[in-house]
Image (tube, rainbow over all chains, first blue to last red; front, side, top):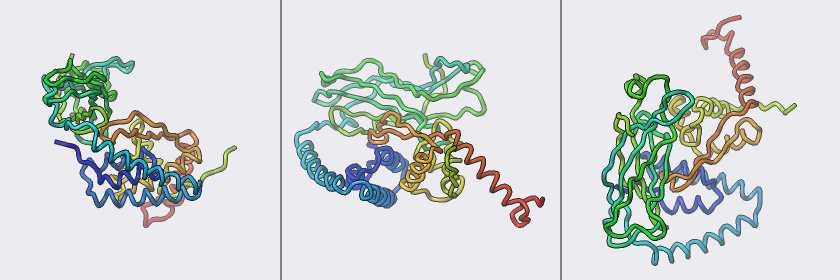
Length: 222
Length: 111
């Protein structure tokens, strides 16, 4: 159930070569939508060429410093991999009491409905999970790109103990549909397009992993 | 008075895609919009190069949003067109419309 991860070497090179974070994020988002590794490498090489040209024109010593910094970071990554967190969040936590739907929020334009998801997280691993966080990415079903996201910290530095369950976590998209109709009528509008949410989780310094993908029910939530 | 900027084809296409997307204009959505309409494959690095140039010329502005998990914790860079950018798009539209007219092979009206 993990999300697809781009070739680590390519992404690492991008991160250490002055390629803007927003561009690296765009490449990752597009890759997750189903592009091939070959596509990612082609895009990455072009981005590296563009960044190298810009760095060379701006500041040659800075380029050298980045190479040295990259070497230091490699050592740090190797150390962290050996001593860091061990639990795979995708299998170490379980989503329970899950519900989805559309929530009415205040809007000066009239009725506004936004997609939302609620659940509780149970730690099914045998280790405490500190700084447990979840992120929801909403998409409309007729679009490939994001339609809004929400983020929550589900457990603090004390961690979610083995077997423990969080309180309700509710994640809501800032984007939605507005109209002059009632919420019920808005749900039946012919222009209404359903949405889907991808939920990701992480704890401590682990990378984000996908916990699941869920269709948003076409129903009102409290 | 600011210097006139003559838009290259891809710059114009990127500006129009940015306008079509409104509040949701960022790298992925702009590239998808261009690809879906033109059928042309867009290299994201080339698109950023173009958008950077447009921003340097004051035709678009950009702002970083919140980091999201699906992007490896990286923020989106959202773009929107400036009044000057809108003026340049309108000027390009006028020029192209006038160039098209009088060419029957292209379906332009003869004046």
